[in-house]
Structure formats: structure tokens, C-alpha cells
Amino acid sequence: MIEEINSVAHVQTFFNELLAEDLNFHPDSDFTDYINGETRLPTYTKEEAELRNQLLKQAFAACENESADIYDLCIDIQNKARFSKSK
Image 1 (cartoon, rainbow, N blue to C red):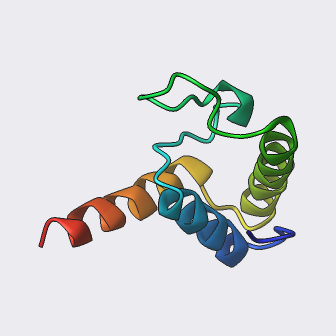
Image 2 (image 1 turned 180 degrees about the horizontal axis):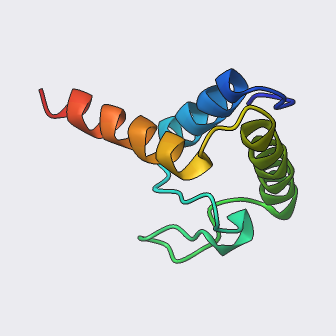
């Protein structure tokens, strides 16, 4: 897991790592809210969720600093992952 986010390139890495965790995520969602669809248990421990929430705050700041839209970035990365799997 990326340790610090201070550029849009880092945001892309972070979002790709979340996809690799098989997470259907949204930038406005708190990581403590994610649950496993089968077990109904939290996806992340408290510590894991806190780390991801902190990284997400950094992602918002990095996107703002570089005038990038975090939502468009998220959609683009998710679409690329989704469509590359279907081929």
C-alpha cells in the first residue's frame, strides 16, 4: 500500500491498489463503511480503514493542488480496469 500521496500519480497508484483489493470504491465513502458482501463483516480493520481514510484525504489535496478532478480520475481508473478485464 502506498504510504503517502502528494501527486496525481500517487492518487492513481492508490486507486489501482484499491481495485486490486477488489473494492468497488467511491472517493466520498469512508473506509469504515465497506463490508464484505458475503460475510457482512467489515472489509477493513479499524487501523486499515484509518490508513486508507488518511490516504484519501491526501488524494483530495493532491488533486486540488494539481487542478485534477478526483471523481473523473476515479471513474477513468475503474473503467479502464473493468474494460480491460472484459477483453
